[in-house]
Image (cartoon, rainbow, N blue to C red; front, side):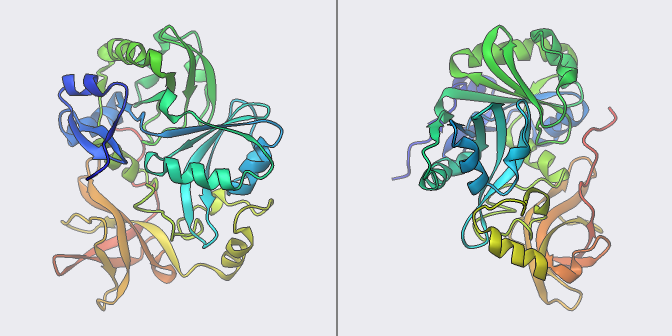
Length: 368
């Protein structure tokens, strides 16, 4: 028997809105309300709201909080100021990644870690087993609903719901305050679509109230609910990694182009081996590529060179709604990783030509 699917607080609301619900990371989640294409363009051109309450949240507090975070994450959390967030990852002992995550500094000796839904238990166990100094750890995943309001009109749509000046929240920053008459809401600007906007971490008791008020306030700006289908094409156009596709327990952060969040100015899990890998150079790299002609790359398709020899695999691929072309991410041999390199995607036995490009594939917003 399969495990019972967990539901987000607004599960019934999504069904009433006509969402197609699918199992995702152990949750019953809305994959689309209308069409992936329409929802994608809504976010790029106007504004959409995603319910991503399946994500996990851990609080880490106390005098040993920073020490624990520094040991388990690759980025340097000592650089964080209160009100700032940081993208990071949890390296494992074998050179791969336990998960990628966000680290928020809520106050001195008080942090919020935001992890992927599919990895909540895995991450909790991993961090707990490294908590040898007695930092206070609390899994608050089931107490918080998370809405991502994304798109060029997000700020205009949301400003009337809060006294906080949303224009004063820079990228990777946040404030905590009242939003849509709900107390204790974290309003952050970390984004996963490249289209601008905010994330709202809301205590579950206020989830429906906040959702309804955002839907109402956003109406004049064309706001619509958006599902996970469009979320995937939006993040792929930006070249953002998705755990389980582009990064996993076997992929090194250096191979994945995450050297910028791997700081050797401190000690962390497997730092020594990763430093050696950096010095020696990686044998394969995660790249973005654009199809030269028709054809849609999909995850697990083989990548080959002109001679038909395998050089890697597609990790994520789709037809880009913004470009009307096939785009993909995949690992290739380092010598074919430079922008402009010619590679081929095996699609049903045919070698379809593609070109390695510099990420992102598109700018975050489209002209309406």
